[in-house]
Length: 72
Image (tube, rainbow, N blue to C red; front, side, top):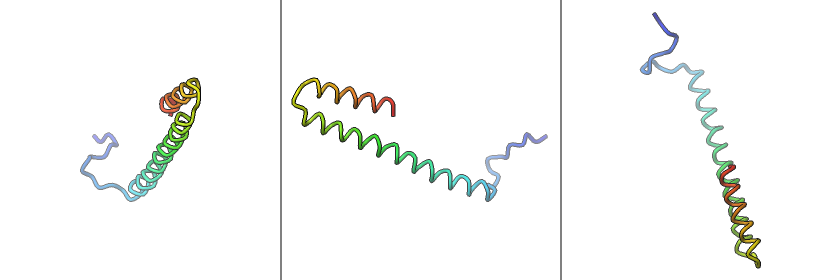
């Protein structure tokens, strides 16, 4: 009795190979976008921290870095 699930050693159908190659590329692009967005905002907030003249601005920059990292 077959369960409808192919064996791991069965060859993949062409439609599955095409789907995985397209979706894999899209997922890699999404991960790259996620990483670059986070890196850009952390870089800007690090510059804010460096240029801050008051301790409250530095504290706010650190808090925003942590919040962006946790939410992203």
